[in-house]
Amino acid sequence: MGKMAAGNHSLVTEFILAGLTEHPGLQLPLFFLFLGIYVVTLVGNLVMITLIGLSSHLHTPMYYFLCSLSFIDLCQSTVITPKMLVSFVTEKNTISYPACMSQLFFFLVFVISESHMLAVMAYDRYVAICNPLLYKVTMSYQLCSCMVVGVYIMGLTGATAHTGCILRVLFCKADVINHYLCDLFPLLELSCSSTYINEVVVLCFSAFNILIPILTILGSYIFIISSILHIRSMEGRSKAFSTCSSHISAVAIFYGSAAFMYLQPSSVSSMDHGKVSSVFYTIIVPMLNPLIYSLRNKDVKIAFNKILEKRSFL
Image (cartoon, rainbow, N blue to C red; front, side, top):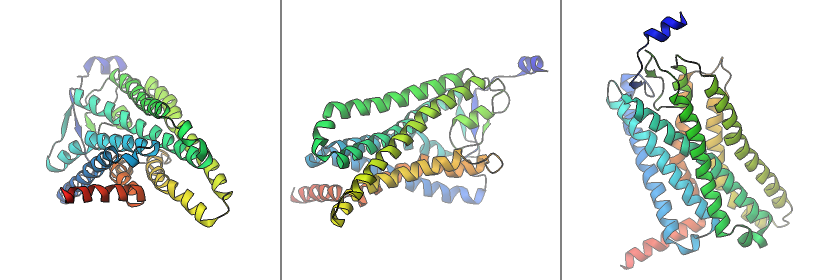
């Protein structure tokens, strides 16, 4: 039977993306909802990048990392949302095999990079609160640059490994991806060849790209909380905690939504539930990050007001 199946299959040249929902009545409202989210994401992240670039008092390690996070969010949203919007207004949302592999590659680059960038930002907050006198020396421009480059290298390495492995997988007659993007697990479900190597690679890289950032974040915050508790004045504690609150919110939303999707037991988990929860870390998080960091940050508000004042004088 295996030989017959191998001999009879016709290789898939394009896939059909099932989209977020099949209910006709929801298609148009969801199109406008996600179009609005995409516009807010683009504007929010572009404003954040521009603001940090133009404001000299924001040229610090924390905002350098935040600028990189905004760039990652901007790119991730652009890789996913436009194609998702097409699924709401077309009856059959097809994507060619090369385009699907490209989307998978760039999605993985930016989602892995985001995971490591949040860990780098946690380390930055650890140094700022636990070793404030050595902060400028420790977080030098050279170290910050190396960390950001390292984040992108890890994103590219992980994406290359996963995409390289999926390219060797054979896809037969099944061509409907039960998702709104070319994600790893929905693609592996369509395979008519062995996915053992893919599963091993997913396991190895997940340990590196999820466990290491989470342990870095947890370790950093254990030391941060310990340092904050040693501060005697309530004002000092409040000020120290406020510098971390935005980052804690971003971490909770990103890892919380990812965990909700991937850590459900198989009896509970279904691809439809997975699609809804993946909306949070692929589309909602890139929109929320600039809002979290701007609405809860005095420095960003001051920089924004200064630029508006300059514009009004011109």
